[in-house]
Amino acid sequence: MVTRQIRVSGIVQGVGFRATMREQAQALGVTGWVRNRADGSVEALAHGPAAAVEALIAWARRGPPAARVSDVQIAEAAAQGAHAGFELRPSA
Image 1 (spheres, one colour):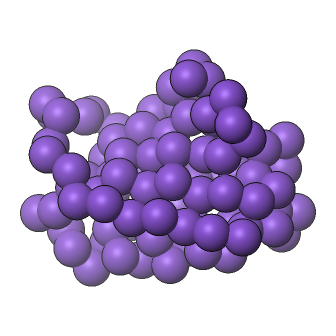
Image 2 (cartoon, rainbow, N blue to C red; image 1 turned 45 degrees about the vertical axis):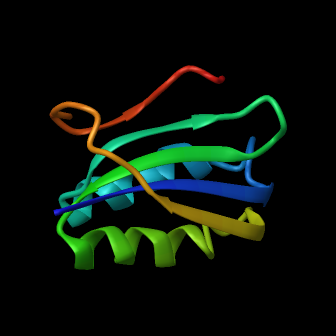
Image 3 (spheres, helix red, strand yellow; image 1 turned 90 degrees about the vertical axis):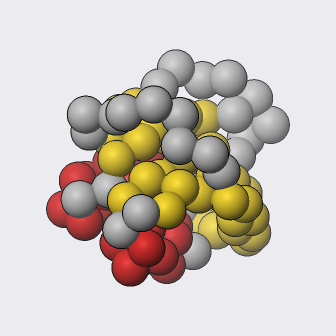
């Protein structure tokens, strides 16, 4: 099991990025959360089997059809307690 912090920049707000990322995470069995940031980026914490988290990161590099991803930053993160699913969090 791995945990990764993901920061996605570009045209990623107002295009369904968070909702679609949650769908992708649920389909992959990844838990965690996703939220919009005040700087226009989207931030997520993903926890699960390494292959599933990597698949979610690969999806984040493309995003949903209306998104225009310009950069994805990945960092190792400590697991932050148990997540029952993949939640949408309020903007930070």
